[in-house]
Each structure stands twice: as C-alpha cells, then as structure tokens.
Amino acid sequence: MKINIGNIHDHFNRDVKWGKITISSDDNSKTTEVFICVSEEFLMEKYNTNNLKSEQVSSWFSSVCDEYRSTNESIFDTKYHAVVYATTAEGKKNGFDFLQKEVIPQ
Image 1: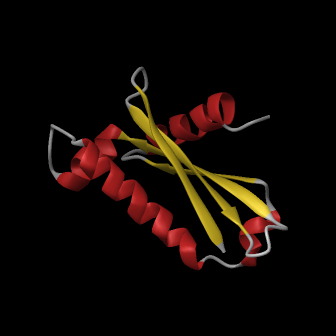
Image 2 (image 1 turned 30 degrees about the vertical axis):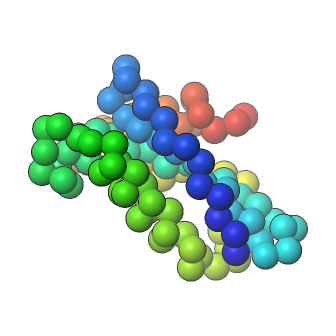
Image 3 (image 1 turned 90 degrees about the vertical axis):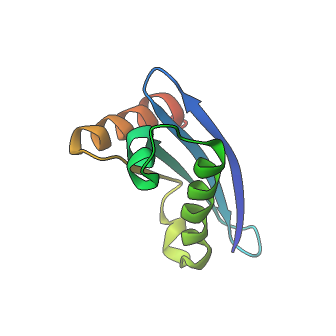
C-alpha cells in the first residue's frame, strides 16, 4: 500500500487541527481517503502542556498515519473515512460534524 500524507490544517474557530491521508493499493487500482481531526485539548493533555508546538502536532499526526501502513484491503471498502481524537464525547461528535459538513467532499 502507498500512503500520501497531506498537510495539517488549523481551524482556529473550533480549536482543532485536521489533515488527510490518501491510501492507494500497490497497483493504484483502489484508493481511499482518511480525514483525521484532533482537538487541541486532546494534544495538550497528551503532551502535558498549555503551549502546543507545531513539532508535537506533526509528530503526533505522523504517528497516527503510521498506523495505516499495515492496514488491510478492507480499508478500500469505503471511499472516505473520518477519525476524530478528542477528550469528550461531545468533542468527538463536534469533530465528526466538522469533518462531514466542512471537509469531506460530498
């Protein structure tokens, strides 16, 4: 499988960061996109800081993307995937709503 990691974007009004990875089969016959959203609160708790650095965000995003390197063919069953990391159920719901309404192509 081939993985193309996109840029990390800030959404300041929501205090979230999001990005996209595109996964392709080795022969490029199948593709899927994974949209990842993370709350700043989640990252600040993870790194035990109130001053989140871009290097921490990049490192975390890269580690999440690495989890998809060993995925199986079932990842191609749907065209888009949404993954949200937040500290509360409401935060997760808001993250999914954001991705579905503002990020994932309709």
